[in-house]
Image (cartoon, rainbow over all chains, first blue to last red; front, side, top):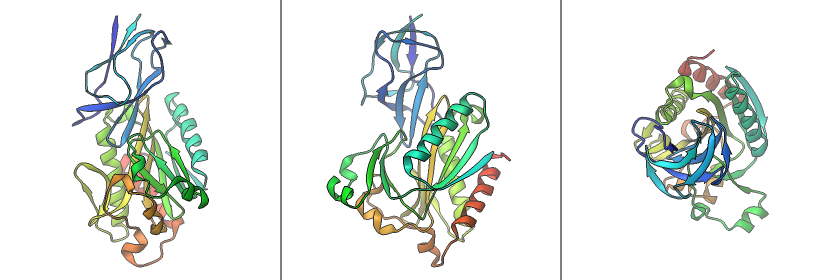
Length: 77
Length: 207
């Protein structure tokens, strides 16, 4: 099982808030496809999937603020 | 970097052009920079609170001012004629993949631009944007897809500042200002765009 984590977004950025998911549990995703939008300060950022697979579990709901490195979703190859 | 002046253009049309340009850059196309002005519109960024709209929706509708939810960071902002809006579509993959650094660079562009009008401006720690004393002159908010940035900066060159009474800009209680208000002289928008284009090219090291 692959973990989609909140990536490094820049120096001094420690956390971000999930805005919305572009996929649901069960969705098939391709590598580099945007799967979740997060916001930090004055930037909205779409996180591309680092791998292809199927979304098994979405771990963080919209509105939640989580630290860099936090697991956002599980993706089965 | 290709610079395209869209003139006075409805917000959604310019938004669409940005999205198309982002897709082109993701596909390996050339970066670009759009300049434009928008008819009066209020946009709510991803961190916006409707409490910062100070006028009821029906009154805004009566005045022909629409409210749009948009995919940039930040709170509520106002666009109106006289505000020079710049939307750089830049590939941050080539620029260190750092959102703070990019926001900082946009502030630097703004500060350099205002210096050309003899205006001393600063950034304020913890608040993105460019300030003249305690008034905000330049608002900044971006969106990013595949590390390609869009949205950008709004510079109040000669904006009707009374329109800002409709909102609490960016959720802040301080006021706003414009270049014309700061210098007490008329500013030619075409010349302003010309200057801003040069600064973008210099500051981002692109031709």
